[in-house]
Length: 123
Image (cartoon, rainbow, N blue to C red; front, side, top):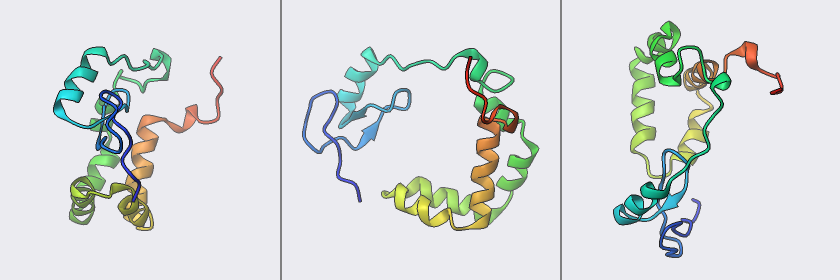
């Protein structure tokens, strides 16, 4: 298990258990989260790199393949277990050995970065 990082707001050593969903900065508490939120400036993706429709979430919601996979109760249980786990990293490594979970991960990656955009360098 990886040791916690120092808080990016107050500097408390080894206290940062949380990450900003916008910029991935580490912080240790609700007050530090609020302080960080006031000054958070994540780097924005250029519009041309976003999936068709403008949002990855929208593209995911429109994917029949993803919706079909999510009907599987075993996959839903795996996802709930990862969501509730404290050590998500090692659990993800374990689950990436399960073909169903790999299929789900691949499907998500195809939605975020469609195959026709792979291996193309930005201009």
